[in-house]
Image 1 (cartoon, rainbow, N blue to C red):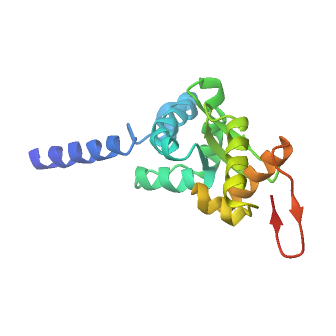
Image 2: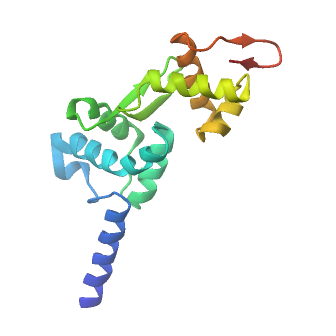
Length: 168
C-alpha cells in the first residue's frame, strides 16, 4: 500500500508540474465544471503563452488532453470552458478569427503589438507570405495567415494577391 501511495504522489506531482491540478470529472462538479476546467486550461497554457502569445485551440486541446492522460476533456467541453475565460478575468481569452479559427491569447498581447511585429518583419525580410511569417514567429501557418490579415485590417500591411501567392 505504501508503494501505491508513493506512485500516486509521484503522478500527482508530475501532473502539477504540467499545469494540471487535478483530474476533473464532469459529473463530480456539476455547474462549476466549466469554470474549474477554464482555470485549469489557463494555468496549463500560461507558461506556453510566455513563448508565443497566441495558441490555436486545436493545439491547446491536444496538449491539454495529453497532460490529462486518461481523463480526457471532449472538444465541446473545452470550447465551453474557454468561452468562460473572459468572464473569469484571468488574463487569457478566446479569440475567433473571421475564418472560424479559434485561439487562446494572452490579453497583454494587443492587436497593435501584433501589427507592429508584422510591420517590423516586413521591413527586415521584405514581403511576407503566411509561410515566411510562420517560420519567423514560430506559429502555425493558418494562424500566421490570420495574423497577417488582422494587420492588414488594421492598415499596417497591404495585400498583394497573385496567382502564385498572397504576400503582405
